[in-house]
Image (cartoon, rainbow, N blue to C red; front, side):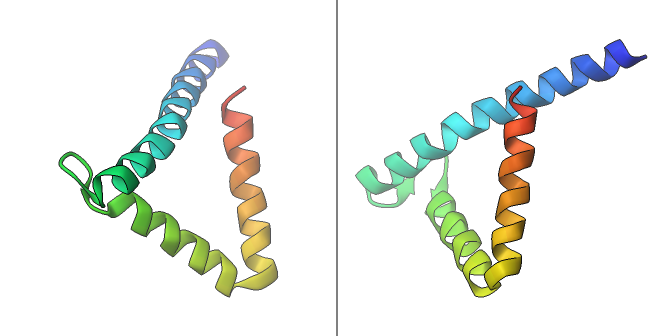
Length: 79
């Protein structure tokens, strides 16, 4: 049974790794093309990123703690 969990964890880690590569690519495409990339919609990546940063900034210390937890989880999944 632990072997199955390790496989699932490995798959999730690979998916997260791919997504973490695609996010900067999508952001760069939106900047270069002017915000409208056919398969990304109307500035969705940039707007979502700005909303996340704004929300974390409004929450002060709690936002920093949440950001730390998110980064810890992403770092843990990539191993």
